[in-house]
Amino acid sequence: MDVATEVSQVARRVYLSMSPRTWFIPRYILRRPYEFFLTRQAARLPVVVQNRVFRLLVLSTYRRFGVTVERLRAHGVELSRFDVYRTRFTPCNAELLQQITAGAIEGKPPVTELEPRIVVFADGSHVAADILLCCTGYQLEFPFLSPTLLEVTHGRVDLYHHIFPPHLPNLAFVGLVTIATSHPAVAEMQARWETQVFSGATTLPSSAKMEASIQRLRQRPISQNPVPMWAQVPLYTDAIARILGIYPHPWRHLRHGSKLLMGPMSADDYRLERPKRSK
Image (cartoon, rainbow, N blue to C red):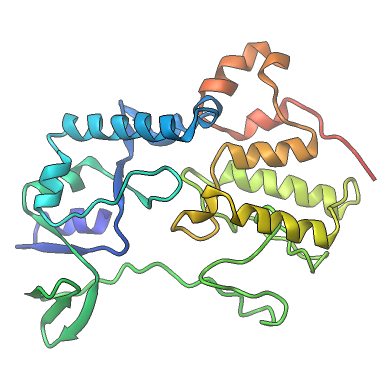
């Protein structure tokens, strides 16, 4: 998205091919970073309320920059149904949205064929292109591990809480999870749990129970997100905190209560309690 925005300043035309459909989320909503709205209080709302409120916030930010859903669609950007669990959200700057509605960037469906200097799209349309820039992400793989040890399926690895392979007690991962905000606080919580496990301060459930937990997660709406290994914060880090006995109950920390309920998640939230010890 950032590359398309920059290139559109000098190119005659930029075509942005996207698959699957996505909703552009401005990095700032109501002049605050969008992750500031990912609060514990918001996570407690019914999903239907979360959808409505977040959609209204996004659309109000669109209007602030002179952008509407109708104008985006008129320039080839097909938006999916707005759903906090099932929709792909892509953070972007407001300038991208303005460049699309100004006609400097045109949305296109997936590329199906390449001919000499011609790009053909899924809807049958084609354009002449001087440069084709692929921003396709990466494939998850672990070349340093035997494929028999860890299986990657459709960009996902089945891990207990996105950390522990149920059948490999001496292996764990940090950062192998996709979230809608920065990773340091999440990675710290994962590392704290791993340290407790490997030091013997706490134990994991049996491999059978961990497998069952993974299967239960697959049945929840959160598993239907198009991004593999996606987790919702702060619910994800709060779940780890409860396991470690360091969940920061607002009623126990009244000085920080407002921040714990209404503020964005941060690592210091989980330093208010001492971890429990169990054998």
